[in-house]
Image 1: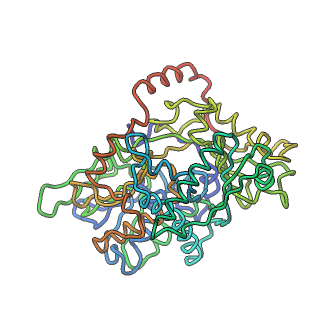
Image 2: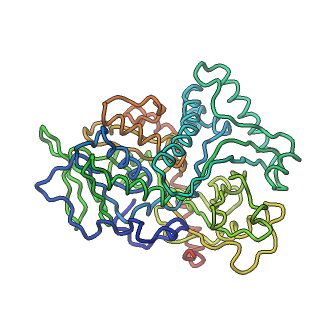
Image 3: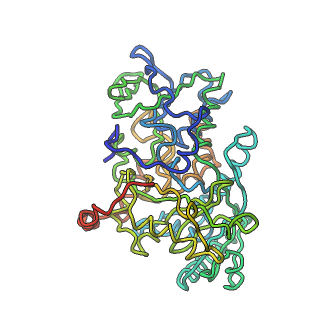
Length: 495
């Protein structure tokens, strides 16, 4: 269970380390008093990651739900101190390879969607990338935005076969759809030699190529919050170091919410929006079995000179049994290890990943895997010297959703309580359109049809998700706990 203030110091990511100057929002509002007991604000947002930052931006636009209203954003630590500031920087819409899992029954570990709903989800991720580009350009944000293509590289015969089956199912569903016959543009490279040449990996047997982007997520969240703070349409305040410990609602006609921030005080609000992703379940009981925290590891790697300049990688990547990675404009490559790869390659147990909310250390096996990954994966990656290779490694906590889908909208049975959370490790490809949609819902009372309906939280959906297999069983937790005891002395702080 999440505890705030946290009893540990978190690792520091590349993104957090490279946005610490005067223009950042570190420590913003940390010493300022919260609104007094005689003040009732219109909206309290909990969590200043990408979800809270982008929702704050949406609510403070002229004509939005927050126009003429008071809005308070409470952050337990600092802006983008959680998953937003620790991710891979990858805005990577999913391809057809996600389609089978989306349509698989809940009882079998899938999302339990219809074909049309699954196509809605994939289209939404493509739309999110387009919207990010539109927003960054319209607001002229300096966030290292890159737009290009991602390669999903298959390195095993099983991976190739699974991908081809997924593509066939996806193409057949598109042909039957009246709404998604066009859809996102992806190409399939089935020839192994062509896949090797395109991906620059001798391991490649085939690959998918489709639209993708990347950015500096910490600077992106900061930029959106600066726009919210500068808004003249709303009275917006941001408070760092204000961990929310509990929520309660008055049993009166007005039904005001009390947001308990411990020693910082209590904020009264008409509406509360939970933007805390993995940590939602410590604030609201309905999410306890649906949202499971899980730990990921990522690293910054400086490529050798043989992979620099005109020889630099020009795509972002999702490599089977390996990592996702993108190239920053100046600092090198940021990569993270997929859960499936961590388990299949023996890097970690399920108990090392799921149910973990501690990002204060990194596991040595992740460090070893990523330190040598470039050389093992890409042709020409050779001759690393001191100062090249793995530069920094960190961990971060994401929120797994029992049915693989985010929870967006009004919390059932709790008038005035809203949420946008449980993005299942795919937040950068979902959050910006989700919060735009939630802002629309708060203003009009109507669902934004640009957001998949299957994202909407409801009692029925939460109950239905209980039929899904547990993300991690008690036995797996116990087995992993014994293994962690054995390895405890090997766990090292991040660089």
